[in-house]
Length: 428
Image (cartoon, rainbow, N blue to C red; front, side, top):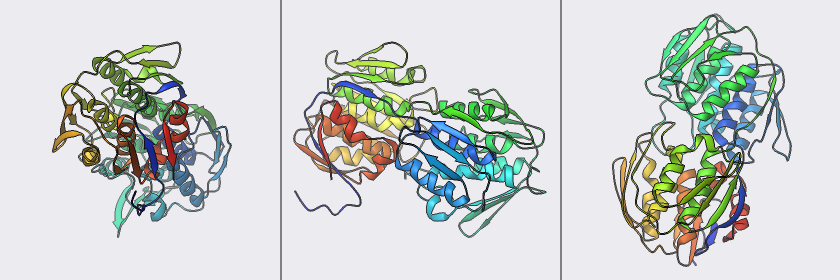
């Protein structure tokens, strides 16, 4: 094995094991990040439970602390945030660049303090994440938006509390854009309507937290969200929903390895798309009680075609893991990516393992079944990393997954959970 010269940790995975056992899903990454930003809207405590121990949460917590937020974290996943002493409204560039969700401090800072400054968001390189929908929403509410060097500045017309309600049309249903504009609108004067809003469960969770804090929000979960601004918000306690992407990843892993897995604390009610595609591919998927999915082997996998779409379509974050599964299906599957323009980073890494995938633009053609073999691959982003990890489970021999820090951003204790299902792997 050559010397490791890659950045960060790596996984060494022994292939050939069918997953068996029970795994519990952690709190949702994308829900937790937005809910943490909402703490900036009040001087009182916001307490979140079921917060996942992942590096994206760590980096956003570091950013909030830099702004002046006090954060107490507990091993059981509880987090108390207090933003009564925000000392700056300028988010440090080095922390913004680590995490795309960090740009969501702009809306609450602008609403409560009348000013916010941030560099464009960082995170994965899975395609364009334009912030024009965020900025256009702020401008519609009366903010002056400008750019100084690499930083964006937004200033309320007459200081704190002077944003005014407006009808905001979003050019596309951006999840983070909807969340950012919603948080700005809750403290604006008058009524706002967000048209073409994202309907993802994580947006809904933020809306429910804002309601618990005293905001007046209606139309949560629809493409037209109405917000009646209030002068102040108070503290609240909320549980972060289970991570639907993690639950889907383990369900896919069980199906592609011919395993038998019970996924506990799964948000089954928002997983219709992935459950339907797994059943179409030949897996046995059953709901057992509240929040439990049983996935079992039900014969050879069949090819399926799908589009990665905004909710309630198949989540773009499950595109790459599903592609890994389809390398084991007997036939040709076609994938179309409709959310991000560079989601295909995983293709080259799976090819190193013997996968037969042809990609063109935002589409991929997967031919199977292929006998994958161990190789040295990279986790190029969170979900591409999940794809190569899943492929490693069925590959012959040892697979080394470099740059595993990307997996740490979205999956809590991934190595422990996989070992609990019978996978042989080591983290170096």
